[in-house]
Length: 425
Image (cartoon, rainbow, N blue to C red; front, side, top):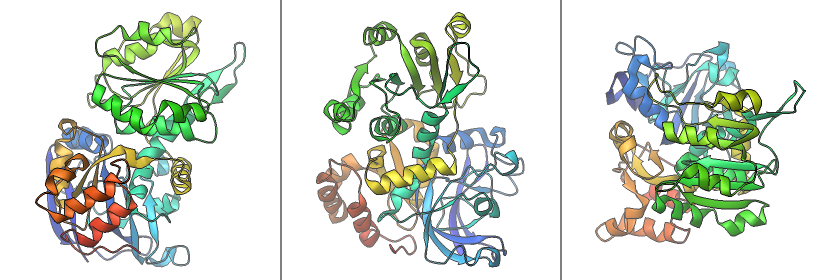
């Protein structure tokens, strides 16, 4: 079968190519990709090439498919998996299979497995490690967003706290404690706010979200209101730290500091702010991985020693985290569409990936079987003056707080110019 896929040949060398996929082996699955959201991690892989831990050394000879936040349907099942998986079923992919401790993953490391493609071949590791997750919602994009949400969920579960004099560590945020999400109104930060307010387990008592953009903060306030937070038992504050003493203002909101701090930007002053506001036994999760391997920041080791503060980081989520994300999406308790600000077709994936840090907004969502330039949801109205497709899409999102939604996806897939075939099951 022919596929069209975005492939990496080396540092900053992305190519959209059409080629023949090999016949699947007995332990593989042929998969039709329907949606993929573009991650900053992919950008980092592109600019680093083989210096990236997930990119094979021979990528110049055996290019790898890009895209790891993808959802779609099974086309053909290898003999080993018949009876467990069936053609036509819809699945979301957990790319971090971690088999044998390897960092290899779809969207980085495999010649024929990635989400920026019309069709791909799922590697046996995904099935063996239970990383092919059933997906039953009425829109594909939720399946794509389950992977980034699983990263947020893992971050919440992985932070830890201790008791003085005890070696026992309790995993997870401190229930009813003080939490700060720094640089927290980008796409992943919005997901973190959503989960903090609506997860059924541990929630903070105080949540402070910072950023330096008043425009982004205003959007966050609209999406996740102080009133909604209060109904869920959380005292929520948004704080613009652009022209203030961020540490002083953050500490005014608490008498002891913050039990859990999440840093959502690889920026030295932001990390140091997070370290400075930790309470006794506070835990800082450096969530946003830097592209620069030599990136450093200062840490107060007096507090590490005497106040038992912890510094850690998390990368990705596991299958249980992703199942939790999918379950909460299906139940309507998460609003992952708040992450999405742009929609495009497969032909927009290369340029979008290579310019990702320079494109404002949140998640860029690609539908692999339509032809559409990357377009901001906020621009639908203006584009709709000349294009009936965007006029209708603007009408649909306007009914839903300007958020991408299932109705908009259904209309797009039914009416956008085709880059192949696409049909919701």
